[in-house]
Amino acid sequence: MSDWTSLWYVWLILLTVFLLLLCGVSASCIKFCCRRKRLPVETFPRHPCDLTVIGIDSDSTAHSTVT
Image 1 (cartoon, helix red, strand yellow):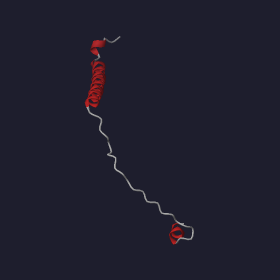
Image 2 (cartoon, rainbow, N blue to C red):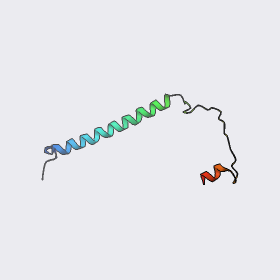
Image 3 (cartoon, rainbow, N blue to C red):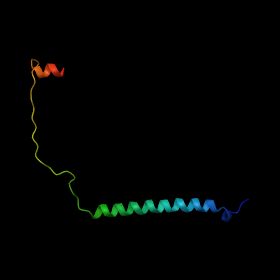
Image 4 (cartoon, rainbow, N blue to C red):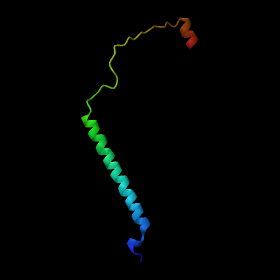
């Protein structure tokens, strides 16, 4: 059987996985802390808007060109 300490590539893979896991946890913590400290801001300011509705009769030329 092989000795575990002589398998350097296994330790390299384990170290890489551990570092990726550590970076992911750190990034999640930083993102959570920054989101909590920031004041809530509306993404879209509310503006009054106008809506225009135009009725089209079946006799209208616009209706016959659309259909």
